[in-house]
Length: 155
Length: 204
Image (tube, rainbow over all chains, first blue to last red; front, side, top):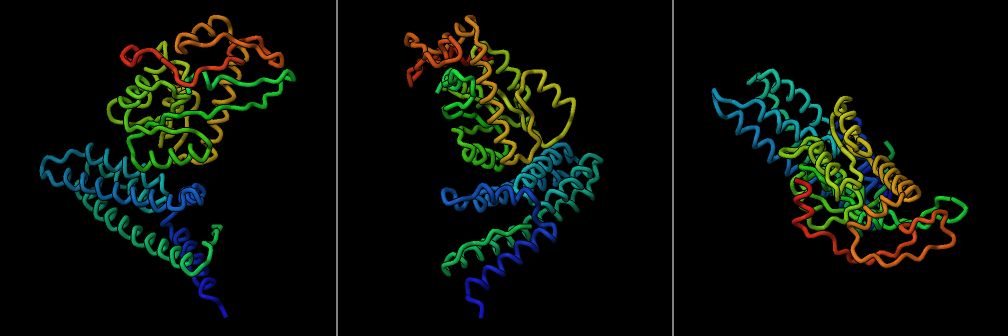
């Protein structure tokens, strides 16, 4: 019979693997995990938290720029998209990064509808990732509270 | 720790470059808060002291006020002064040109990379930056510093002395493979560098 810890650890392992396999996370997230240790036990959570704040801010900028009906500054939108692409790349947020590539193309071709669509998608995507990572961090906490160690997951 | 201190090494007579290197102090420049957080951790884990700033202008201010940065790592694309602009200013400065500068960019644009290397960048890192990249850069910088130390000429020693105040008289170590004083000098721990204004204005 599985102990609670073993069950939680298995859940954690499976969930982590699924996030990679479904393309939510990539190799860079693994790189961030390498930087976490006993001295900096919340490093990954801190970085992703900064990332999600950044998402909110940048998406706000993009929305405001796109709201200037008839006078949209696509280079301004593009510059926010570029920043979002950069930070999503730095944390391993693979889907968000991919959407930014498409979004940038819409900015470059000055497609208003394209940009609006991309903005909606990016907004949904970062929120979805935020919820999933929160679930992952909750699992970690549960494991630790149950007296177990967080397993190293090799993707 | 002044730039000079980074170059102080013990070089055994066997010529073996097993170096007891003092900690490298790195100024990291990036307009992205996420990237600043990541690069800071990468550098700390690689046993570097780190100061992070958000712009090229801030970077110049820091160098002007507290010029004991052993190296600088900077993003290329930043509003205002780009990483390239910052690199140029550092390399054109008589006081700071010895500071190794590494450029980071999310874009793999060959002409850009070449331009930075031509301007004197130590290396060019493609983002997202990984631990292996930072370790490699640190080794490169420490190795270059050691090389500079070995081949220091008298004129270079004088240049060093310009921004190290009150250097005590050298006591050359018999085991040193070079007779250069800089390798055996014991620099005072708090440097009276040129006044902040003088240094800052040399960067403008």
